[in-house]
Each structure stands twice: as C-alpha cells, then as structure tokens.
Image (cartoon, rainbow, N blue to C red):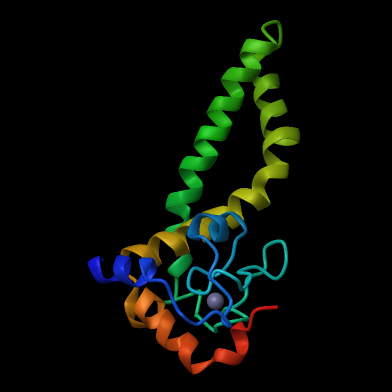
Length: 155
Ligand SMILES: [Zn+2]
C-alpha cells in the first residue's frame, strides 16, 4: 500500500502519455479500474470480458460476480425500504400493499439496470483494491503502460 501511494503521487516527466483519471470518477463512469478509461459494459447488461483498452480481465474467476450480490442486496434493500416508508409518508390514505406496488413497479424496476451495473462495478473496484494482484496494482499498471505506449497517447 505504501509504495502505491508513492507511485501515484510522483510527478511523471512523460507528458505525452494520457493521464489516468481519478478513481472515483472512473467508478462513477463505470470504467476499468486499472486504466480508468476503458468501459466495463458494452450493453445495458452486457459486459466486456476484458478492458477494451488495457486488456485487464474483469471476471477474475468463474462465479466471480456472485460477490456483486453482496453489493446489490443492500442497495436494493435500502432503496425498497426507504421508498416504502417515504411512500407511506406521502400517501397516508393509501393501502400499504398498494404503496409497496407503486414503489416496486414504476419506481424500483427502472433502477434495476443501474443497481445491476453499479453492483458489478463496485464489486470489481472493491476486489481490485482489496487484492490488486500483479497487473492491476499501480506498479503493474505503470509497467503495462510502458510496454503499450501507443494506446495512451494524449489527444
Ligand atoms: Zn483498462
């Protein structure tokens, strides 16, 4: 961890190479945790196997994304219970089961793709942060970038 911080804070003299965006911005934009530029998804629910830019494998093992359930479950629970109590507050005369249907069908269902995508993105980021491995650590990223300079030219 110590050496990573040193790597990140060092100012690189090479200005021709595109700078890596901030991690939180890349997470919000659902980009690769290593280069922070390549998109993780290619469709609404369809993921790239590897980062289209730096070739980092997103699915490290078989069944890797079972871990994303630990992320999506609390997000969904908070959205549904929070929405339910808000609905009960705003529509006190409504039947509770009707309020629940209103929260699930028109309010929660459209958010499912968003929850699904962010659950996976957060899981990938957590896993890569928790266990960077040789290639996805800051040092690994610097080495990879040295070997593939053509991919990261500034515009
Ligand atoms: Zn990448």
